[in-house]
Image (cartoon, rainbow, N blue to C red; front, top):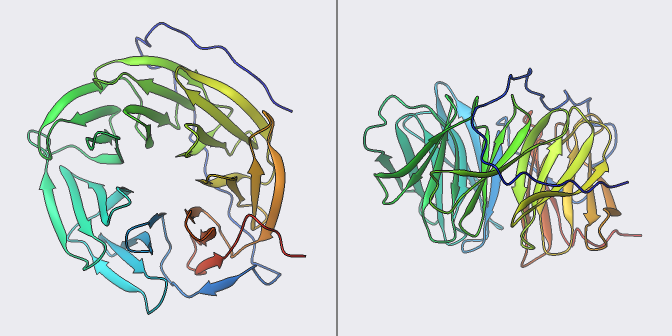
Length: 324
């Protein structure tokens, strides 16, 4: 099944009433051996990404009133980096730098040596930033707990601000287009290149929770409450595919071949081919418990499934090819 939806050309003027945000399912204990290998990581990871330049997986976890970033190189032990304060979200440039949103600004972390630099955003000392993304032109975009999006024009200064949402739960970019996920409104909104205006906004299922961009210019959204995968185009923002994915889909990752979706109610990850206009399941794997975060290494074809309950990091090489 799939659906095609039109889009509105009128900017959104005010946020609609909100609903209780959806969440990942509480996963049952894993009863079968996960595919690939599992690297131990006791921390309850809240997000993960793969850095191409260093070949390392980067995992963000809470830690006693602050946050810890664990760097997992392809070979060698994990390297924990304790941040001086709490971070809520992260993004990377693929070239060895990771940016982590926090209160009043963000942290810049070098994956190669673990060096951390605090960057305060001017005039935003009391702002709780909850989301972060990086545009193709290198500008960072930050979202806040009170529903504003800030597009920076330098590392410390705000070039544009748009307060339109109940809360900014996630940001992704395609080129210089920023897409905003608001879980309370279960909506996605595309901003214009200036960052000062909303171009289109669409309802995102019954309870959208997570969002990812892929190399084909698409934006993937997990409709966890509605048990579906939503696939949006961004020029303009339009719902191109909607497909049923049962068992509380949550974790997402895009790759050149497949779109990856985890099922948190059944400890499963599925790879879908989106090329035909309707998602086609190509591979399916059993996972570690609570597969909340996914990351993909394009150069090796390795899928990382990261547990949100401390069950470790699952490494599945050549993941697009199901072993027989």
